Image 1 (cartoon, rainbow, N blue to C red):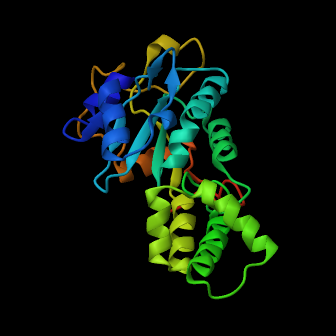
Image 2 (image 1 turned 180 degrees about the horizontal axis):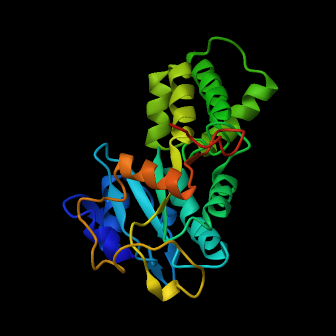
Length: 260
């Protein structure tokens, strides 16, 4: 299944080794190694390929090899959630030869990444409103415009420990609170779960369920013209097989499936 996916995306930017993935997220994106998923002493131990889209955003992949439960995907999400939350946006491709687990997987994705506070990201661990509050008080304290209340002092003390990175200093220098709020709320909306049925049949799993006849077995008759990740192909597969696209909202968890 992984091989078919890789062959269908030849010519695209694809990270398929541990070293390439680690370099991309720690050197190119300047993320801490502590945010990377680890298992069995290795980073990205699942060895699932990651596509880098034309806009620079990553499309992670998860391959359902015929699991009867979603526990494997849940453990995958537990390992990847710190990295997902550190990114301004991403897609997670849930790839399978059947839509059987799509609904359960979509619900898990929404539950793991939905936040009780809007705009919660790596830069805003307590939500965007808490950061905005701190930036307001910090600016007030620096300019000595007025005396600070006890609450303001508590916000300042709390925020000084939370918001000490260069990224936070840049936000403080920018000073446009509404643009900052909009930026982080949009980031949360850009976390997408995209389930898709692979366009090949894998007879190893025929004992598990019956499926409609598909010409060709495995990758023997695959076509490089059919790319799983292309938008039109993805939509056709999603709706013909009963799949849906999920997005994580700020406070409301999963938003309704996108149509059209």
